[in-house]
Image (spheres, protein in one colour):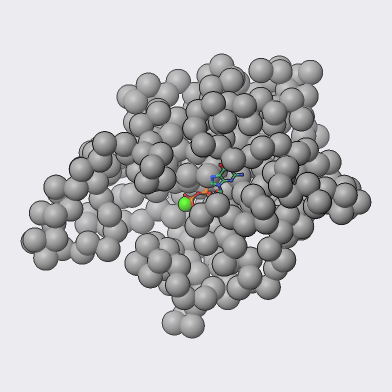
Length: 316
Ligand code: GDP
Ligand code: CA
């Protein structure tokens, strides 16, 4: 068993649940959560970082589990006021959520880095573990549809993912450097494991892998690298992953997830309902762990986190 540091790579709501589970079972000095910033955008003068927000709300226990995103107990007065003023209303901004965006935006404009702002905001909400953006340099995910290249949020929220996607790119890469916390975590001599949270591999994890030097650093690690599949019963729980797999010409199964990460991965955790996939994945050289990967709340989150750490021999 090793008792060193764990680096978790996360997107938004799917990744956030496991990140919260890892934080529940590991002390603060043993976990760094690095979050995708490819979804970030400027809207109504605010800098919005949807995946950092999802991770922050979930790790702080403030997330709305019924709606599946945003803050619990949210109200929508500001949105109604903005609409009445003729401003764009395609992106939902709750009143509580707006507080987060205002706090982040003014701090950034005052010259703080996104890394510093993220530490400030997460600590203010009682999160003791380190949460860091993948990069302090702007990276913007774009999808290619019949209309050409579209900004991610315009496609994801504005068009509800309806236009078919033929390619994905991350504007700002190459050239975006890993945040200091990310680079430090990758280089730690006591690094024990890298956990790819059950996030969308194409939209949430690929931008992280596109940051300068990250693929190479992960490929060169000798510690276990373990991913949790975002598929349950062969399907994404929510979001555009299943649709993307079909549109990008890939199999709608764990084989596509394993093939996508390729040699960056040593172990894949798949849901028990997909147990039939295990033999074929193992034949491809991957270690496979079966678990109940559905996280309905904090108990499931920490149970799965323990199973993930146990699978790679990391103490908790
Ligand atoms: P987003 O950035 O908010 O879209 O979130 P992520 O990329 O982090 O996660 C989206 C993926 O999480 C989807 O493909 C879901 O299938 C997956 N997901 C959500 N909840 C769970 C869960 O409880 N268990 C597993 N295994 N996957 C989940
Ligand atoms: Ca996201």
